[in-house]
Image (cartoon, rainbow, N blue to C red; front, side, top):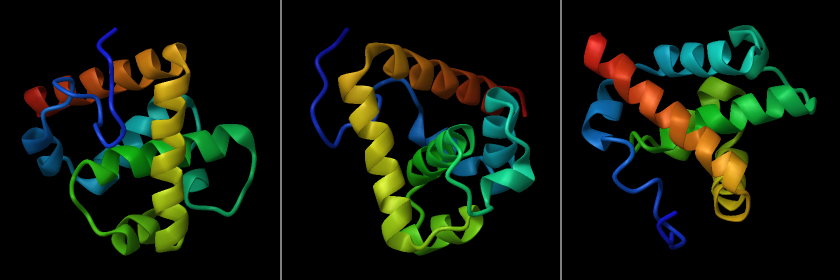
Amino acid sequence: MEKLRRGTILPDKVNEGKIKRLSIKRTICFISDCTGVPMSFIAIKSRKRAIVEARQLVVYFLSLKDMSWQRIGKYVGLDHASAYHARNAVEDLIFSNKAYYLKVQSLGQHLELILKTK
């Protein structure tokens, strides 16, 4: 595994130009399908682990689109600081847990494939 530095987000794994074209709804739908959490549950205030993890992944992938934290938070039911924290939580797990890194990397690759086909 290539050594990662803080502030890098899956280098060479996600084509950021293509991610920008992915709509917010399609991102939420994709993460919902992958995690098994219904789309309507991602924006509700719940601390259940599965819902929180799905919400954090949505925030992470939306943050790759250079959206403002307020706008990201609006779509997932968080304020801007909580959205920023959610992205940092995913990055921390990526750096500390190889299995989680591989999971996020796989999701990023699938997201890239979806962009190529649509």
